[in-house]
Image 1 (tube, one colour):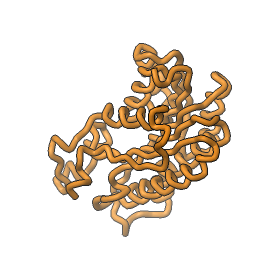
Image 2: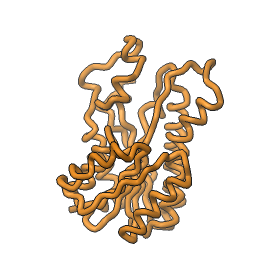
Image 3: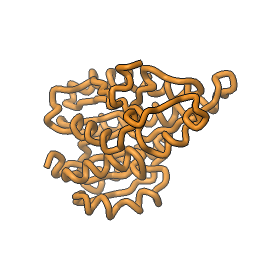
Length: 245
């Protein structure tokens, strides 16, 4: 198993893509830290992850915008298992507000989760990981091509790609790889709650909608030793959607 004896933190692991990633890494032998701002939701998934193959699972209450809570989640992994091998920065949020109506608080709220959460986890990982560690950032096709009403989200995801490149450069001398996955439309509540879809302003063909497990498979590859020569990469996992835009 690719992640036997390894410890992985997945942010936003209580549902959606985060849960699928946690389950995939668990199925390949990883010990999992579920870092989620709703710990009760994550707690309900512990047995499922153990049944999937995780030797042990820890839930850390964590608002990723709060650097102290991020530090706590990383230290909890070290205290329990003495190591940290994989960090998956998945936690995210999206708002639907015209630029003219966005306040500074609106911007800071989204950037705090979608960008600064990854910043905090990357810093803490760099302080704790040994050579061979891997960080995978969950960005979005919105980092490249976007739609109306989601400016803070698109900006944060574009910045996350830049962070990925910078961290890959600085991580190389530490033996830590950093890569990003750009999901397209994925069958999660976040997708179907999108008011652009509900209003018909944005159309999706069924073939353009992937499964959380599709993203999880890509994350597992980038986090595994078989991707040892891959760092600073941005992998589109979108069913070819960007190729047609």
